[in-house]
Image 1: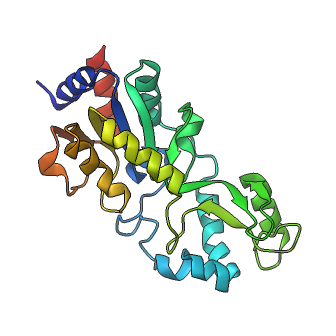
Image 2: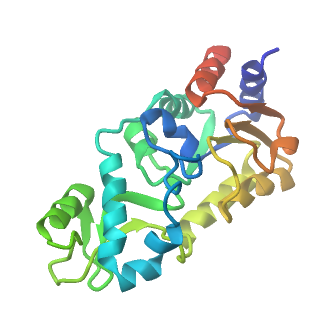
Image 3: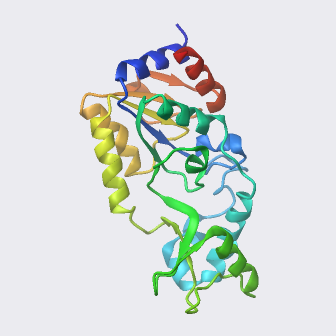
Length: 249
């Protein structure tokens, strides 16, 4: 029996109580670089603490936005791939209880997942921390282009902050609480494209295992949970999930 067939059986046996947890690897086929790959990862040539920390945003918004503007540009024209759509198909079949993602790219929602739990936030909007105003990604980028220093600003003049969790910030409590509750009730956690190294999200598989659930991994690199997984598929996420859907019939 192939790994894809074993995973398909685990999904069937979970009887609708599957929680999907995704990381940067699920978006790589969409042309979005991951974080740690040498030469190509987002942090390959930059110290995130120097450009993507909340203190940098507060102290030097121009430095912060010079980096985040590049990230926004890198997402131009990016579309969900078949791995995102495979997750949507599992939801459509009633096999998935919820989708938790570490990604800020918004591609799960664009693929059709109705209520992804975006534990690191999303670049789809930016906010003014002074008066609470919210702006779309398109409007944020327009305002950035109009400023000589490249810093998008609210009508009140304060710099905008993308609605993502920066280094030095806590994860949104409501999102992490929802994710933890889902993990603790999952018959199967299916982690896709995540190294499972960034806490507190990396603790979610442990919550599932502690409650008696099972774990399956679809990711290329090693994770701290490899020895605890019922099955691990290490190939391209699109190819692997296509095979799982085929095995489910």
